[in-house]
Image (cartoon, rainbow, N blue to C red):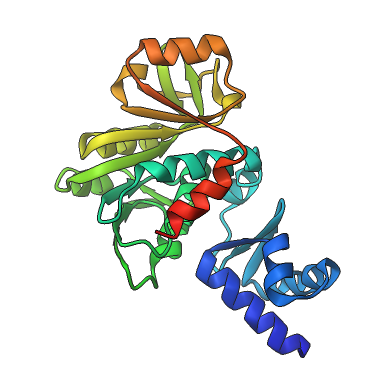
Length: 265
């Protein structure tokens, strides 16, 4: 296979999936990992892909979002496990609201291709679904925060007040005994509006977020229905979450395989 043809095929795989691991690309293209890495370097130079821990994202030459790009690789293995567990809560035909957090993005990536109605305030999330034939996409308007590519503020909140969804999936920056936090005051206001629009609220957060606080308090622990975490959550926090009446779903490493199966339904 010629280099140009191989890179075109590699880009098509990434475009359809939103993200692909080096192992997946090596298997699909039947070439060495060093060849895949060279091809990714070329795509990254062209602005159509971005390398991260273990794989590559499709970017389509989109504007750079420094905060999102920096945070996406952090705790990436945990985020993938959590996302794989969280998608088991999503049924085909659901109307689903997704925020712009990096863990929620991993959930969104596993939902690409499924028959859903997606509402989001996140440009990176919307980009995953924009060309999907099976998915109806609603992108919330408002002030777009340039570091993360999410729309915030009164226009986004007013639009949310007119919508009704089955489930909302939120990422958070910190969790302590008072509840959930995020690092942006406008974001917290918009996320509260997302919660009001939903029948069920699902928070996705890795175990490093527990026992801390951030700038803005979002809500108490008992204000959500589900909390999906990785298996490094402490026994004390397991007890505290379940005592608050929240259904705790603990992801494990083998959940990635099950998540892939759920995403293919």
